[in-house]
Length: 201
Image (cartoon, rainbow, N blue to C red):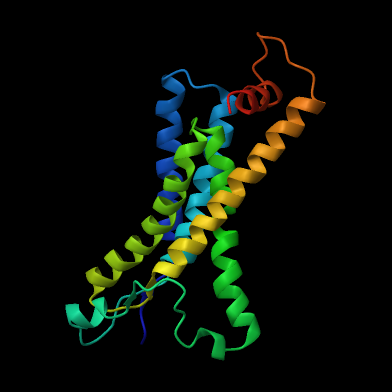
């Protein structure tokens, strides 16, 4: 029988338990409830990304693939998509647009957790896509099989998604500051936290 490690239930539950422990320590460090709310949303989003990009992981692969066989599956040539465009249209859109959509929430949501200067965001964007592909490569090496292809184009598409998310956040922040009255300094609400995040950009 074909065996594989699914994202649900064990990896998902483990991720949620780690979230609860992390929230406990953040609360002890006097982080605001608003920060914890955004941190929780972002953590769950990252779990979803892990579930979509790493899982399921095959466990009974039989004969292991040699290291060179796994490394040959790595595409380091930008804009080379192999036989992708010979596939059905919905598969092409899933591969291209899906990789962009996957990381838009990252580029938007990371700003609610930490301040990142605009000039550093292109590097953050590339690092995000690279982290996903490297994770897939590490799993492939660990199980001894290229269960997912590692592609520089996925890195670039993920980076585009992060940059789009950041652009959307900048637009959101501009509109929020223009439409919302400045909250009082003593307020500790989502309303005032979002205002503070929008102002620090």
